[in-house]
Image (cartoon, rainbow, N blue to C red; front, side):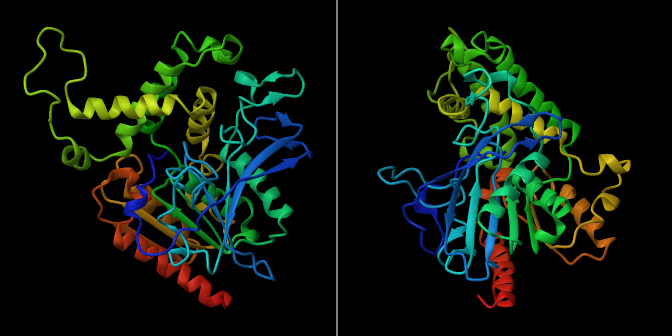
Length: 391
């Protein structure tokens, strides 16, 4: 889950990584998923920034949130507005300094930005997978990501980092491959969704699935796109990413016209309505509906404590990494208590944990912003890693 990256003019001190381009890695070894389904072959889109050092000890994996991708930093040639979604965090001289670290972004399986997903061709039928694409879990993403690490010859990451859904992946890495993660950075995230979060995801999915253009997920064959459903799903999600204070500051009760439209009162009258419709319509033009269904369900399913009767501390026993967790006071989607729960569970095993609770007004989207204290915390953490590695 996340909104849009901050505009280029708001970037903090430090330089951009500049013009970047994705790579597309082909994997022919079948991947068995948590559902029992098998992907016979697949493609993963990745981007890398910085230089991998001789002993391959300076690699950092950045895991993306729901509607983001492998395009973490920099811009694409001839696309000046294509700023990576975490460009204010990653680059030369930035908190995650690419003069020191080799940073990797990977587009998750099931996504719609270059990795194999529902819009990809199913080799068994020669047609798009569509609704037949297998259910994906956070753990499945981690198993696919480790193959990227193997391809690049990276035995152990200096850090695995992510915000929101990306933070869940980082946490899963520390559990699934504990010896391959030195540091785990989990920002504005959770070890499991609340019932309220699952409810929001269900409303968004129903908006998509009840759109007449959805055609039970086979809209590719019908030449349609469930734009109305996708737009509503995005509007619902976007509301949850912002705090009440930030919405009040941005829009208040401002109207587009001074007087109410008593003749027909259901058009766009308030500025906040205009903003949400714009965000929804823009999203429906580039995101895949089946991908949205898959990724929100992966969010719902993530719960490492479930196999241990809900005991998160027992679930986190395999971890070996050091941890940095950060939360934001106005984030009501993943409130600070979710991060504190992880901290308490880790401390029961005497894991080294740093925790920062940032007083920021932006809600869940604060993890994308350049709040000074937040960036200072991340910068100091990576500075310590760099010093220990002699970078």
